[in-house]
Image 1: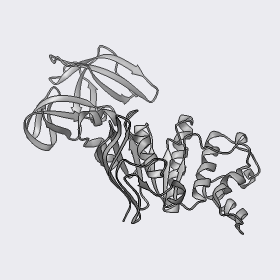
Image 2 (image 1 turned 180 degrees about the vertical axis):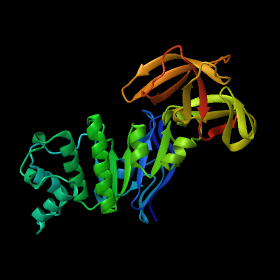
Image 3 (image 1 turned 90 degrees about the vertical axis):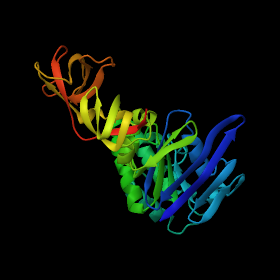
Image 4 (image 1 turned 135 degrees about the horizontal axis):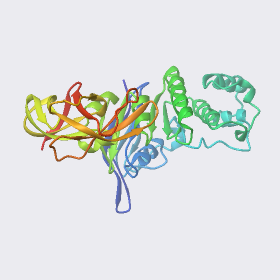
Length: 346
């Protein structure tokens, strides 16, 4: 069931257009990640949904209620939307209990029990109630901010890069914890992030913005394996892009003959994700083959660069296991697993 519908949203700041004709649907209980380079319109979109700004054109509909239609908009505090910001935005002079209860109705009879229930929900120790924000770690502060947002019983939760200030290991743990809490509560969520891996692992739906326009939206797997264009492919991860001649469901390229999807004829550009390429040391390898020109060791994985024989292309860069890692100068053959993705006619 659709919870939130964005219809041709447009927002301008003077002569600059921040968003242009953006349409997107959010399903009840789902998690959507909005990604894009700096200046793509991610934050503007979030502010329009939250009610901090009004669109110049388009509509925002939440559970059948029109929240915004052009400049006419429901105020932010009446939308039933929770938001967790990057820094948590906790009140430093209030206790954790008072921070969580900040949005409660006045004179609530079961105030303390509600606070305890929310602490349990976000997996925080009840003994933290009397502490101040500065006495908590960054991850704990974000859990408090989430508890405060949940305390208002929102219909929709907005997460504005809430994990970006945390250390790498803590970010992953927090992301999983937040996803678990919101899923248990059955609350649909929109995450804005600049971290592509975070978006792909967190969301059921990923929406890619570029220059204020929605380029592509769909499941993480679909966008990663079947991006609409080369810019989206490169934004969502490492990719090997090659010119090729398509002949139905196969194509000939610098890596030899590969299977492709969708089927095409003629000149095309194909995308192969580096993890699809297996590199094997073989001094007598027939074409397609090449030679390792650079190896960068990174612990569990290593990045290698391979120059193909007789091909005027930049080195192909591949991440591989560091077990039995190759060395610069090794001659190798390259095997392709799965199908290459075709962008379109070149």
